[in-house]
Length: 328
Image 1 (cartoon, one colour):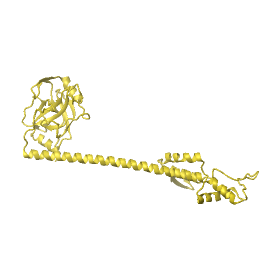
Image 2: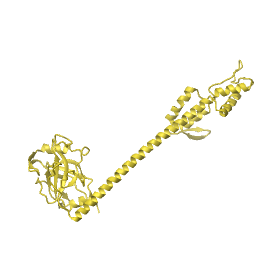
Image 3: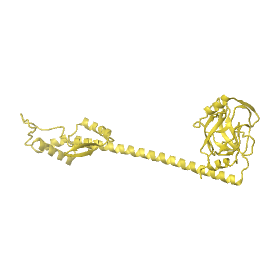
Image 4: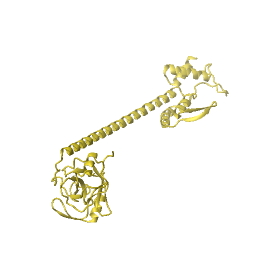
């Protein structure tokens, strides 16, 4: 069984000389009807569907999604988010009369001053309409009643809700409860989604900070052992951070394909470099990279200095000095 719905393009107003529910004669032209349709903005103020003319426009059993002017020059509405129980009762002819209430152009609550703006559309029972001659709502083959006009002051409502049967009251109570529960669930879901988004953002920021701290620690460690100079150690964490989210790279090595992240590759490259600073007294004319410092080659000095720096947690330069002093 399909869910009951109200049809689109329901006529709610027409041009002409009309008398409102307060007995005031008003003239509406085709341009007035056009401006009503073009000026309606549900994002600014969405007109509800009500029973009778409640002072606060509530409870709402649906909403007016858009207004338009049909080929006959009448103002029409497209309803949406209509409570199924309410749509079923309207479709069954329980509320044959409809009354459109507007904010006058100079009303202080008018969201678009200077033009008539739809406030709500009231569904009535046996109450006579103020506007006759409008096309009835079409529910399949059924003829469900005419559209009527009402200008309603929010402080002085001109209509009261007709007496409802127990069955109608029960249905409307269920509809109101369902709407309230849906609203509560929607608000709860929105709050949970916002909280989850905030937590994810906080987690991502903490991950970024921890990762950057690791890059700084790596760079400082390489500076201590003499692989990086101080300016290089200062720049390296920012370079690693820029590469952190880059896609892995593939390359061939020893006949096989390896895949590694740019960060890991750069860290491995830096950590396997020779020391950037060489200490020692080179023999005159030595051209093979070897040197003699109190009987030790550069390779031996470097090896001992690295071990000393690691053991005593000192910078490489200090370790070299200590190693050289031990070999005197």
